[in-house]
Length: 135
Image (tube, rainbow, N blue to C red):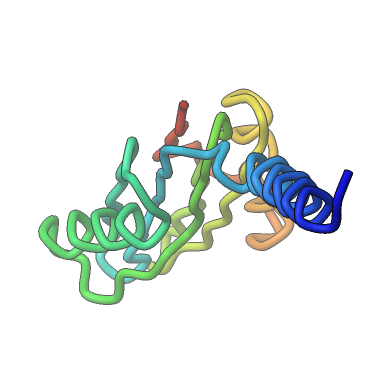
């Protein structure tokens, strides 16, 4: 092989390595998100969004549309992952909440309930929202 062939072959190999290393980053094609307004007691969710930013925007918009005064992002998902949001509403007013993500919906719900209980220092009411993104 001459020098030109060696340089061309090295360039082709380098391009192949770059495309192989980029493959995992492109694996997740859909995103989901959940937003909550603890003050208003409403939530918004989105699934199947093409980007994390779009999923978050859609969830926040739905939360606000439902009357959320203080909407904030609770969790987001990508690829084949699920998220869940659990809450505890107190008799005197107020709310504690927690979110979790996991590979399965059951794991996400269980994680949200566990985290909510840690946050509220008592058993939580229920999972009020969940979302799974799929590719």
